[in-house]
Image (cartoon, helix red, strand yellow):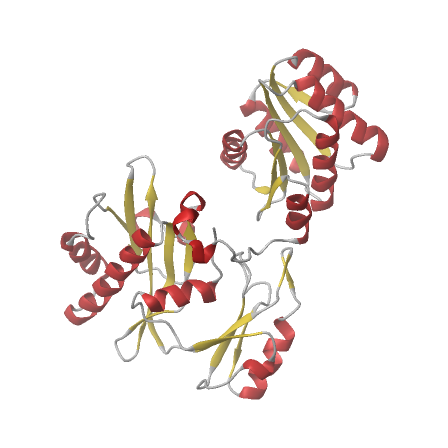
Length: 366
């Protein structure tokens, strides 16, 4: 489960991590008790808010009220903005990155930190990021914090303050069953104090039974994701432009990884699960078409699912409604030869190799 920034910061506050004073608002009338200047931030569960105009700065109550009215109702990459977080602006002296996540290969929590804060951590060179594993079932070791402080070039008192925040983050990480806790940027102010200006928190859905207070929390969904959910279809919109339809969560993730490896980027993915019901396949393609991908990558591994039944559903969509983008199909498993023939007759690319299908998908994307 992903948390909105405001909700993550509420939890940060509970664990003693310093955050700016702020209020959640749906109109300018909600802004009370803050000192200026402030920053107004759209509360949606997707990155790129600033580029989309979902983050604005204000030096007065009038400017803040105007910014709230401008942001509320915006569509940010499919997400409607229904609330904003208005926060006092920190006086920034230096920006850092600090995050804790799970390293599944090492089966241990991983602390990451960098002096290159305030930018996407994926764009920071590896030699600018310190990564240290945290032994499972232990506290955050002091030697990890000493390494981090030294790597960041922090003075003694700064190192103590940084370490206190990292320890609080790790407590939160463990007690809230988090998969990711991230502060980017973690700001060092001109007064020498650290403040979590941004907050990202993702918890493990499998552990929700231990957090009854979260079970009713509303999830931020795009209109298409809401439509898919109402039809019992797993459908997620991402940042890229390639549509992926696969059967099974693992195969879907592998497909996205292969597309990325070949230079493409998934824009939306849809998991058919174990169904080969042509009607369900048709519904899935209708949803995919509404997302308007540049190309659709259909990846089916036929076990319980019969490949030819899926192919028949795709063909029926084409016959009844048409598909105005290229479709590349990787078909493997039960009745794959029949399925490939159905799809090739319909004018689609149909192959058995995942790698080749991904290459063709990226090529057709242009």
